[in-house]
Length: 384
Image (cartoon, rainbow, N blue to C red):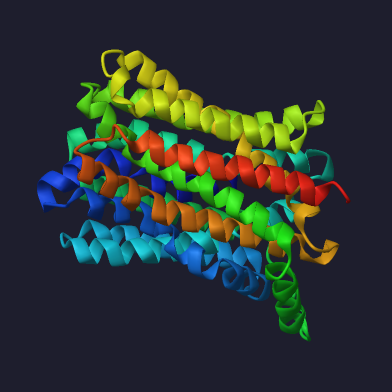
């Protein structure tokens, strides 16, 4: 299942190294590229809670297999599409498949992993996005240099097809579905969640984090190409930056175990993102490309403390013990909203000012909002 998660994340990581190629071959604008980067999250932004209900009713294994097949089919079709509108539409379909594939994963892990290893398995699952994205950054440029972007799309689609077969064969079948008032209970949990303050604080904090993450990482290959880091060098540096986020996620759990408060972790995470984007994008650092790389690495690694902390806070932010999973779904839905909005807004700003030099200001605004929300979360949890 962990391999299946990485295969789904490759559908996000396949695009950033291909943006310059798509701009050249299809005449894609920077803003259109921003939407192509973010639209994979559109389904999650609109349907996160609904897909969670579907997965519960349909069965987690069936849902994951169906999502993997949708991802594979949309990827194959995209390789035959040389129309920008068609690529954008298929990107939305990929987002639906990705959501169906990843939402049931924690439930499947709880069913298939021994209790002693469950915490480690869930922690490893949380790193599937940066790992899959890093693989895409490393492998994508090699395939693009040797062949074409449709071939790269088909290779990624083939990987998810293999994972669909593997999950269907090796993951235990879903237990018999219960019949009764499950739908009503879900509606009650959803209403309780979206009318409580705690889930909103976690969701908005995740939104401002994800807004920056996708905007910066999505266009990092383009920035590195402008600095002269092309080919294998640019791919390796981008992959290292992306993997740093996985390190940050894991570190959040370790530091929390050592006594760091959630507020402290969130402030350090958002503060690291602010400093990192300043180093990466401010024009004053243009003469020192290494400083820009260090800034991107700090942005990704320290920023990884934010999602690791927020997922750990979900049980405490939930209005009741019966709404923990619904709260996590709500948080993920707003995370997707940030990922959808971040790249096109960052691209629009870059197009308006003639470069990426003011991207740090956009990130700073998000970080200040995140630090404010961290303070509100502390106030919310204090009486509890």
